[in-house]
Image (cartoon, rainbow, N blue to C red; front, side, top):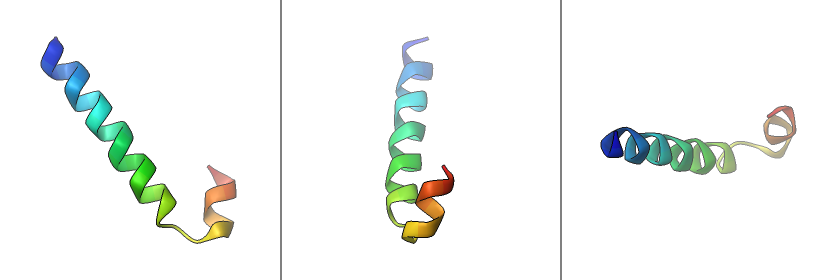
Amino acid sequence: MIMNDKLQNYAKEELKSGLSQLPEGWQRKF
C-alpha cells in the first residue's frame, strides 16, 4: 500500500504543476 500512497502523491503533484501551467481563467474553474 505504500507504493499506492506514493503514486497518489505523485499524481497530486503532477496535477498541481499541470494546473499551475494553465491560463489564469482556467485556474479559477478548478
